Structure formats: C-alpha cells, structure tokens
Amino acid sequence: MPKRVLVVDDDPAQRRILEETITRFGYHVETAEGGDAALAALKADTAGDICLLLLDLVMPETDGMAVLSAMRSLPRKAPTIVQTAHGSIDAAISAMRAGAVDFVVKPASPERLEVSIKNALKIEALAGEITRMKATANGDLSFANLIGSDTMKRVIELGNRAAKSSIPVLIEGESGVGKELIARAIHGESARQAKPLVTLNCGAIPENLVESILFGHEKGSFTGANEKRIGKFVEADGGTLFLDEIGELPLDAQVKLLRALQEGEIDPVGSKQSVKVDFRLISATNQNLITMVQEGRFREDLYYRLNVFPIWIPPLRERLEDVPELVRHFTARFAAEEGKHIDGIDAEAAAMLERYTWPGNIRQLENAVFRAVVLADTPMLTVNEFPQIAAHVEGYAVTVPPAPAPKDPAPHIEGPVMLGQSATAPATIHVPSGNGKDSVGIPALSDSGDIRSLEAVEADMIRLAFGRYRGRMTEIAKRLGIGRSTLYRKMREIGIEARPN
Image (cartoon, rainbow, N blue to C red; front, side, top):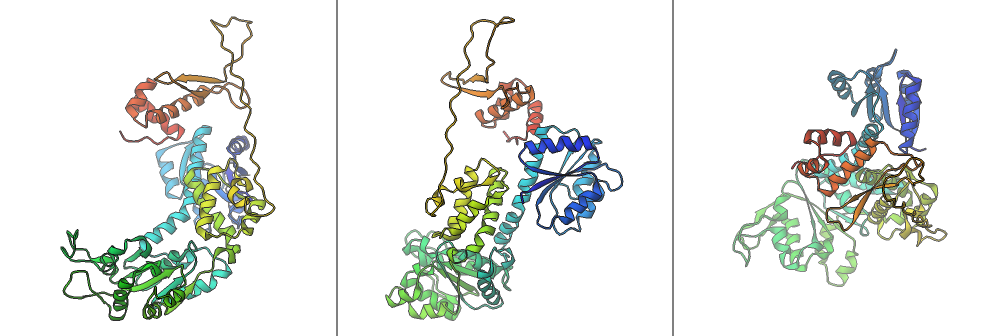
C-alpha cells in the first residue's frame, strides 16, 4: 500500500483544501475529523503506511496536544507537523517538545507546506540510516541493525556466538556480500564494544608499507620515516582489529602476523624490543585460502590460526528473498538524500530484481537502486529505472519515452499591442545573461496555460539568482534590488537555506 499523509482537522472545508493541496504535491492523503479518529487510524496502521501527520492543534474534545501525548505510547510514531490559526511562540515550543517536527500557522501557503512536508519525510527516511551510521561509527552496530532473511539466520547465529568470545574469526564470501558489516556487528555485541574497532584492507596498501602500517615503525628506521608510527595493532589495543582481504597479505608480513596471534606481541620496524598488544582479530577474504596454501601463496600455519571460527556469507543470488527488504531500505535512504518522493517499487520491477543473479551482490544492488532513484520521474520505481538489470533478465525490456516535440517559439511583436490586436502570450520570461551570449527562461504560464502568480515567478527569480551567484547573499540582494533581510525572509519562505558569506 502506498505511503499516506494523515490530515487531522475538525473543519471540513480546511480538510478538503489540505487534501487537494497535498494530493497535488504527489502524496496519497487520508483525513480524520478529530483527535480520536486520528489515534484510531494510527493504531490500525500496523504496516506503517501513514508516513506523516498534519495535525490541527485546536480541536474539540481530543485536541492536537492530546494526540501528540497519546502518540508517545504507540510502537511507531509518524513525524508530525502541527498547524493552528492561533500562532504563538509558546504553542510552537509546546508542540515541538511534545514530539512535533515542524509548526505552521494557518492558512499556510502551499509552498511553505510542501517544504515542511518534504523536510519531515526526509528526516523520517534518514532516521533509520542515521541510527545505523551512528552505531557503525561508534562501533556498537548489532545484528539487530542488519537486514537478512531466514537464509542469513545461520550467519547471525554464528556471529552472536563469536561475539561472546575472543576467538579469531574468519569471514568468507564473495566481494560485496557485507563481510565488514558482520565484523562490525560481532565487535558491537562483544565485551570489547567500548574499545576501538580498527579496520584495514590488506589489498589497498603498497607491499613495501604493509609492515609499517600494521606493526608501526621507529623514527629513522628507514628512508622517509621522519616520525614514529604506532601501527594498526597498537591502535586496536584492547579492541578489535579487522583485516579485510587477508589473502593479499605478503608472506613476510604473514610471519609477523602469526607471531602476533601466538604471542600477543609485535615487533615495530626498527624497534629493539617487542610491544605487548591485547587485540581480537577478525579477518575476511573473498578468495579460497586453501587453494592459496596449496599454491604456496599463503602460510599453512597462519591459515589454521585464522580459520578457528569460520563464517561463510552466502551470495545474494542464494538469498534472493532478501532483495525486497534491501530495495526498500536503499530506496528510502537514497530518496531522502536526493530530496525525492518515492513510494516504493512496482510489482513488475520487484519481480525482475528477484530474478537477477546479482554477480556484484549487495554492493551492486545498492548502486542499482541509487541510479534508479536518480532516474525516477514518478513516485514508483519501474523497470524503466533499471535498464542495466532489465537487459540481463529474460522477458523484460526498458521502454524509453519519446522526447517531447519542441514547442513553437512565441512570435516577436514589434511595438505595443493595441486593444483588439491578436497576440500570443509569451510562455517564458527571457532573462538575458550578463555576457549576452545566452539566456535563461522562467515559465510565465502554468501547465494548464494560466498565468503564474507573481509570488511563484518571484520564487523562481530568487532560485535563479541563488544558483547564478553561488549563494553570495550580498551579490544576490544587490542584483535583485532588495535588502538582505528581505532576501533572507523570502528564501526561508520558499525553503532555500542561505549560505554564510
């Protein structure tokens, strides 16, 4: 079911106006005539289809503040914009403290209302991602933050068991399956979660610098060593060291790594004494280490020291049931980042994505959804937004809509137009550029052919000036012929964030 905006107002005329206005913005709208009806709708919304609440504060019986208070006990709290005809600072502060994300005074202009709705939905869409990013940054990502179906239950079960111990873990799987996320979740649920999680991709560092980066070096130990470096093992002291692509580690470094695992001490380059370190090692690889051992490219004794607790992550093609949830997650995230309103993905496109084999795994799916969100012109993602995937799935084809035919330019009329003289109204106000080489156009007519309001044209002029003069407020105000305070006020009304000069 598509996402809906719930409009709560006791005035039938106001409800109809808001319903029509928000519908024009491209959202689905549901209305409630009072606080009790709103709470009933929210409690019945078990699937979370109500994505936003536009709530009147002053209503008989159960008013807006009572609704905000009752929403605290609900398992899911939709972002709420409150509105009232009796605007005051005290009312705004009370509503925001009660949980509202924004406050508008009736009658709110459509532009102000649209900006407020977009901002509220953007915050809501990013909330889960922000939580995930904070958990990742703080090193306390847990398995509850991960997206996975029944196929991933075995991986999560093993990860939980590994987190309760300091046993070395080897995570195996193809590139892009999420090995680092599993490593972060193990650290986040371990007794070392308050200590640092240090990550290093062994395949991304030059061979001659591997020992220095891993174990550190003393000042002057080699050419270019102008200062002492402690190395990744010392950085991870007390915490966890995650070595990705462990199969790329040179043989010389493998010997020192084996000693660090066995003895709990390292030898920095150029140092005369060993350094004791307390660390938990998690390693990962997308290669077959047994084959590398047989070919002499990986030490057999190190392999058995690393492979104490192996965890294999299946590729995405073996857990296609994860695709719908991953697509929903990535769509919400990228739609918020791109400032677009995307309700989801249609059934045909979803079926196509579940039939694709995904050789690049989750990383490829993430990039495909990102591209689809950028390409999308409608609230639903379709097959047309996934052209590279459709080209590899039998039975699907991308239909590229034909380019619109160019419109005939308005005729140029010499001299003034007299009463009764036939003339075509210009569809665009032409604004010549400073160098006279080109021009930009601001629409003078709406899609229906009606004259646009001066307020809308003025908003476009401000946006044009903001982009042309790169946000330099003094220059913009000068070119528009208005004061800076007036410019700031108008920019706030149309939802443009001023940049400090």
